[in-house]
Image (cartoon, rainbow, N blue to C red; front, side):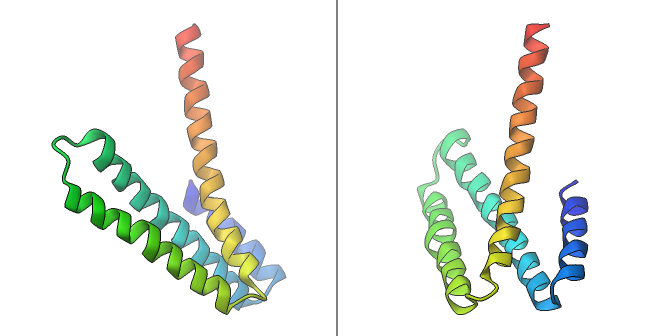
Length: 114
């Protein structure tokens, strides 16, 4: 589902903008997927896994926060004129994830009421 929506947005972007902006949109989407992957792994290690492996938690936190966000800052700092496409790609992944979470929560509430 995510890939279909992302592909349709890529076609729209490449029709209206240049290829370079479209590639930055793809990079933003990939960054969003990597960001959510490391967030999922970090929360899994913090909440679900017992006993806690603090070296793994520390490694995931180092990869997620300083490394990923440092790379994103560098990308936004270097390419300021088309950085909005990088941000748009990142936001699309987050928006679709939030939509999925909300729809699942509403669906589970409806099944509990019935």
